[in-house]
Image 1: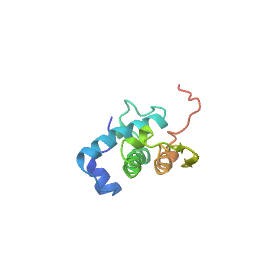
Image 2: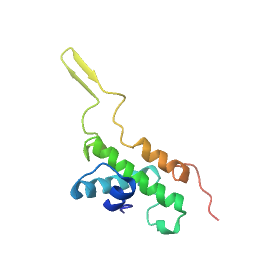
Image 3: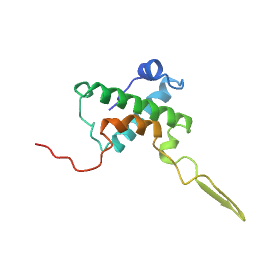
Length: 124
């Protein structure tokens, strides 16, 4: 389920400009990433019934994830893109500690919403 449209990304978040086709593809992937890290708490939930802090921060988290994926090479950033280490003969190159899929900015937007909580919830 898309959480934002390109107008929000461009006009409110003021993200890196991109064409509509790229935006649509990355928005779907970014929404999937946000769903995964929030343990699917927002699936089939009407965001308009949530407090403004949650609504705005979820939208900004998706926008930040879109911008992160765009800057990291698009859709390939989610699927691992390039290898983190390469060896050829006696030569070896290692890039960081692996592939980073989730934007730290997206996590920062979601942190105050309680959606990253992975403990047990009690419902009455």
